[in-house]
Length: 408
Image 1 (cartoon, rainbow, N blue to C red):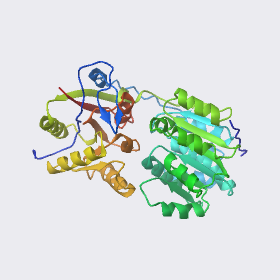
Image 2 (cartoon, rainbow, N blue to C red; image 1 turned 120 degrees about the horizontal axis):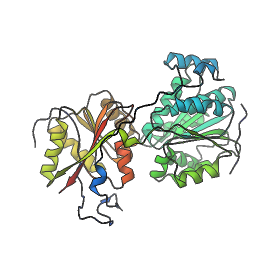
Image 3 (cartoon, helix red, strand yellow; image 1 turned 90 degrees about the vertical axis):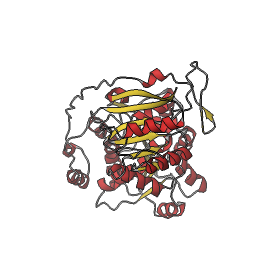
């Protein structure tokens, strides 16, 4: 494949469901009303947290291709069969043929539509035939980077392809060792990748494939300058993949600067919030707030619940209170080591715990099936944060619930 790149104390708990405390000011207006981490948030009218679910009937997509039709190596096709892949999703069906031709790709698609396979299969196919080349894949969170690495290993089973996972929260010396083996695939978060570039433990002279997954999240999290710095280290001739649920002016600028005549693939279905029933619960004082959360969590309709707090300390404190009330709960936030974050996610995924308490940044990599409720124990700092939070429910055609706790 020709590669093209051109510059340019409480009651006993029974079951979880969450709700959040807030420093919410009901006086109205556009002035900032609460802080988080030293930044001032913006006032959000409570009415924006109330919305009936309007499930959109999922349209069955009829692919033009089968996986066996794609011009990829037989070992990749065998691995697809072993994993039960039969027909490609819309983003896979439209992206893979174009990507195999070497074109730059901008994929606009919701989370959970099969984006990972859409870029991994063309990238792996190229690396099988170009052993002296590399691919770098950037993701906004450690958890998403780990998911991509896991998928890459499964798709490349039997190929003997080295990889390196560059994320924070784990000892960096292991990453030094992995990079010395000249891995074919480098997967990581922008901050840690930039760190390795500055330490000169990473060189990207041979990285002729670059993937930016969930670009909108990366920009929301303030990674735009890191991304620009990393992309400036790549060869001028390369193939680029940009995947995002939305395309903002900032993303458009990145695309125009770092791609050449990209092909845009539209596979976005509906707004994330369409399948989410959104409501508010009012409380008066800290004691009543905790009691309101408790009552929500023991509701019969509640299954797995993701509860959002404003700070890392707040997440730990709330988790302790929930455990004391008899709930099976754990927390995930930036101060926890990656092993502890993965352990908490694993317990949540396997239903060993019913409630996972999280901060906004830590939760952006959570992709767990079966979450029935999102509870904002504390009001999000921005409405964008809110939409990211509630995007954890209402997936795969299911209806989810999002409840925001607001002080009277």
